[in-house]
Length: 214
Image 1 (cartoon, one colour):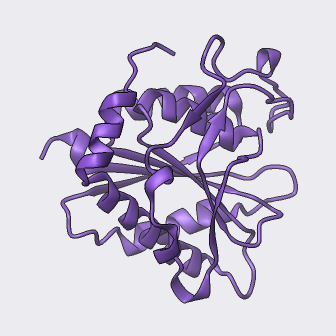
Image 2 (cartoon, rainbow, N blue to C red):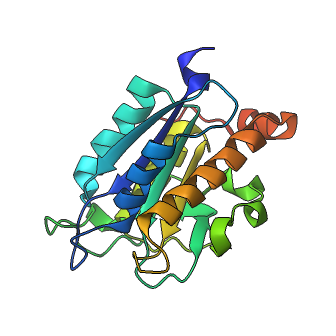
């Protein structure tokens, strides 16, 4: 099995604003302890990303150029979420909120000249109803928030020809600890990998592939 078919990269984010402990990274660390247990020879690689537009742009490029994953899953925190959200798409414009360094992208754009919306081939077909361990609600969302999470997602979808996902998780709580979020991520990503093995999804990736440079 080649590197592109055996590596899955999962990222979480570091602290930002009042969120000194980011539930996304805590959940990814728990996933790392559990592993994917997908029945396939899959190497799980986890990385923490800073809430920093410029640094994220560099790191996402390196993920796809150096690791060449079959799938990249970016996990972010949505402080208002009551469920785990599977984000279907990412938008190119509207990034006006400053990151942890006070930086905002020029003209609020992710990729100048890029398409306004890029969809995920994985999220669009993932069977989210099955991914609800221990009573955790899972929903599909069409608005990823126009912040560093969605910025990361857009770049990753572009580099990966749709082979990326963004999962927003709620803040940690007594009823939703990191261990439960980690288990939920494991089930969701297992489901995504199963979907990616299906011929119709392989055909979707082939049809929607792009060689446009970033």
